[in-house]
Length: 217
Image 1 (cartoon, rainbow, N blue to C red):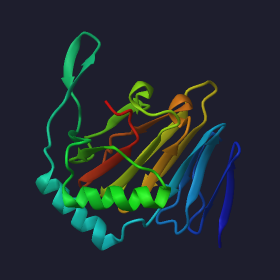
Image 2 (image 1 turned 60 degrees about the vertical axis):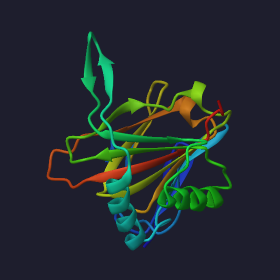
Image 3 (image 1 turned 90 degrees about the vertical axis):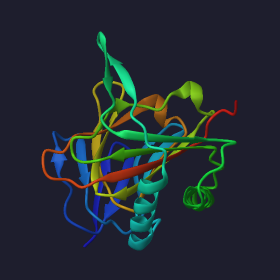
Image 4 (image 1 turned 120 degrees about the vertical axis):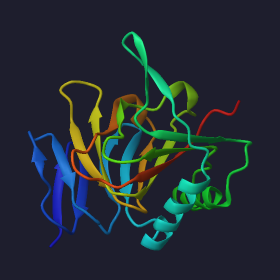
């Protein structure tokens, strides 16, 4: 039986279990939803979840291939008065740098699906549940006006939290399944931020492929 729910003006539909509700402002979207879900709407954009853009076999092959060929590196960031390692590995590709065939295929398929010409690709490798990404939104100064950011998930299912920047906050949770795409379009980066929390249980590795529309140098 399909379940309907509301978060502000947004509506979702999932054919699986009832969503968990956290303090009336957070919602958990069920595993393996079969239809596109609109998670939130803004004045000039939206956040959408598209499951099954890549099949389970494709997602597994992409994970294994990208794990082997991507130029993974460690990054550091300033936290208070010292530099610390970012808790994940990263890899970057920017136009006009040629993409590996696998990433070119990803960019073409997702771009055709969303009618968007992406010109920047980056990868995050979450080695286990200890790897994470803090609350953030993508840097507006690097993105085109009303940008599109699409996140392809490969490997282990990890939970993403999203929340509004203004108070009182609205927050939601979404399990990112392998082969799925999370899309943030328009003015979403101005009004929302997102976060992959640590997982306090045995968790296998995950790769996130981020496609963006950036200002050309």
